[in-house]
Length: 130
Image 1 (cartoon, one colour):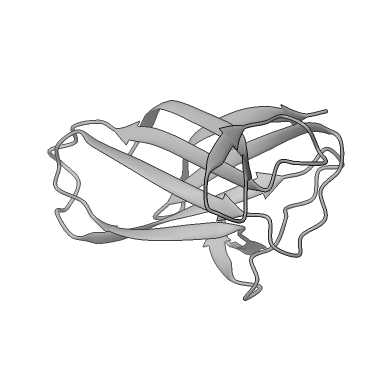
Image 2: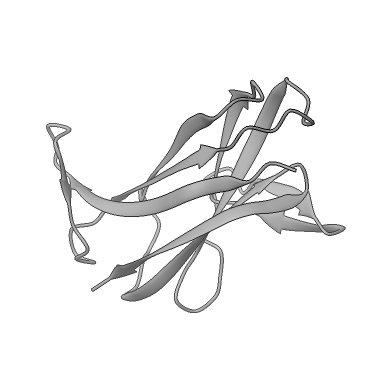
């Protein structure tokens, strides 16, 4: 089982020219960057892996991905917000998921980020929009 360490979720306002500025204001935040480390794991296979990220809004619902994608967790299909494919090397790796708001509607409050890989939850983080 992979485990994430130091999971951080930071919200940004991205301008038309591509410049980013940290922002926790609902009216301007339109990007979330989730950064985390995967620790050494010499038992896990070195191969291509997928990490699914669920962005859970203040009402407890997952913000869906544009393609309405899902994955299996504890025998049930669950939707995800973003996914990343990567090559796992059994050594410490830093990964980053970037989610752009697009047409999604967000609300004020506390958001939770959950990370899943190979049927297990491997980490979580949170942020607040004011």
